[in-house]
Length: 388
Image (tube, rainbow, N blue to C red; front, side, top):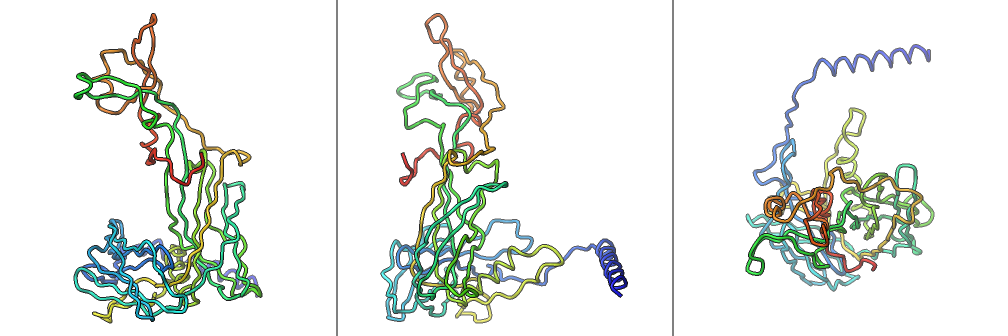
């Protein structure tokens, strides 16, 4: 009987594969979005800095940039009749430096878009977020894994979300002491001059923010304890641990409804892609379009305190790290008199002066991609929180 069932399963899978191979057709989604796309609301009403991002969904296949919502009026409202306007910062971001919220009140978000649509969230209870116990890390065979650890002695939180900001320092293969100086009122001819200390382009810092939904719950445990909740993996051979890496983790307490909503969103966005995955489910948040009640809105508004903690990891703390800076280009000699034609178009950078018979004869040079750290997307400004 077992063998017969196994054979039936094999035949069924083979038939399904043949059917899929023979019936490959273009899929036309029945989804029809409005001309402006449904509104997407992302943020958290915090006792402190508060920020919301407003954007719009885009039509399939979704290979264009996401449109942000501009010229909206956004405010936080409390059940105690308090009102806190948020200021537009650009790129769909609306924020306030600090909100003096009342822990005994409930809060909601009101939005008036530039085209006259009105949105309002349900009142949500104010949650006190427990402190982060620690941000830990472990180097495994595939890279460095980073975790969050927390607990609530009152066993009252149970549902958590994390977000983080990353910053890392990296350096280039070669150090440039000199720079090309186009002619101006001070230098009548194109020339090469020494860089000021503030103009060095050997070290840069890059930044990134978390994109996956990072959730955790202790609802099935006797104690409200979260141990080693996965946050990030820095895989071997990547730039983030070239020198020094920092991660600033923010922790939020959620209601059960907010956690359930975000869990469903996570499943819809991160766990789809094969015929064996769960099918997408309808998302129903706590924010509504009151000017057009039938129009869906994507988002869930929560309120409470936020706890954060920063962690540094240095390359010197690792047993080994496979990322190495290399330069494929070979240093080139540029003699005096040729700098205007060689450096003017910006693809090469001078490195150091070359002397001949006690006098400068020219400069060594190489491609910008070997010298200027800004070509890899970073900037040379040291963050205020960076150790000396």
